Amino acid sequence: MADVVRPAGRQDVPTLDDPFPLDPAAATEFAAHGHVVVRGLASPEEAAAYRPIIEAAAIEHAWNKDQPAEAGSYASLFLQSFNLWRVDERIARFVLARRFAGVAAALLGVERVRLYHDQALCKGPGGGRTPWHQDHYYWPLDTDRTITMWMPLIDLTDDVGSMTFASGSHLLGDLGGTGIGTEADRRLAALIDERGVPTRTHGAMTAGDATFHGGWTIHSAGGNPTDQLRTVMTVIYFADGARVLPEVTDAQEVDRRGGGGGRPPRPPPPPHPPPRR
Image 1 (spheres, rainbow, N blue to C red):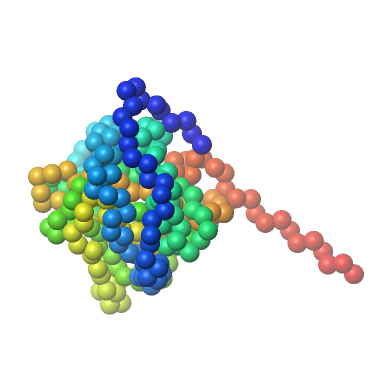
Image 2: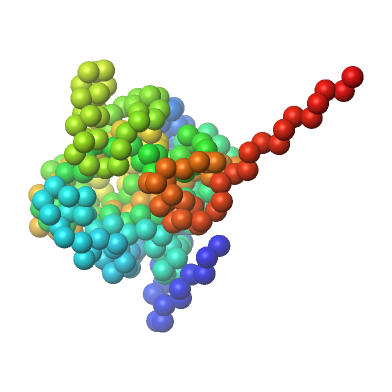
C-alpha cells in the first residue's frame, strides 16, 4: 500500500468501520437493474465532517483545474481528482471504510472487495450535463464484478439530483464504446431509445446517501443549475481475486498505471500437461 501523507495539525474525523444493516432487497435490486440507492450510508454529520477535507484536496489536486474549460468539453464538466486516499490519512479513512466496502461486497455477492481507486467530482455552478457512458470502458480488469459508490457530501435537491441510470444495461456488457464525450453520448442514447431500456434517477439525496452502480451500467448526470459546488466522493471496488487484463487499450493503460498501481498484466495460463498413457 502506498504511503499516506500525514498533515500537520491533524483534524479528527469519524470512523466508518461499523457494519451497515443493508436491506437484502438492495442486492436483489442491484443484480436486476445494475444500480441501487442506499439511504443513510453515512450520516449527515459524518458527511459534513469529511466534506471540507475532501473538497479542499479535490480542488487542489484536480488534474483538470488548469485545463481550458471549453463549453461541452470533458474538462468543463467538473473538477476531477483521483486517489485522494494517498494524499491525506483522513481521506484514507473515508475511502478505506469497512462500512462502505461491506455494502459493496454484499451488493456484488462476493466475500471481499478490493479498492480500485477513489474519485472526487466537484461540479461547479452552471456545470454541464455528464454524457451517457460506461465506466468499465476505462478499467483493465479481467472481471465484470465491479461497483462504484457515488456519495454526495452536500444535500442534492431534485433540480440537481443523483445520476440517471439505464436500468438493466449492465446485462448488455461491453457495448464497444468510447470515452466520455459527445459521440458516446449520442450512440448510447440511441441504443437506450431503440431497445426501450428504462431510465431511472433516485432523485433528491441527503449528504451521506449513496448510489451504487455496476461497471457496465450506462449512466449520466444532470447539470448543476445552483450557485453551490456539487461535491461528490466516489469509491470504486472490484471483487477480490481479479487481475489486470493480458492486453489493455490506451485508455485502460492510463488506469493501469493509476488505479491499478502499475501492476503488470496477469500471465497467460500454463500449458496443459500431455495426457498420461
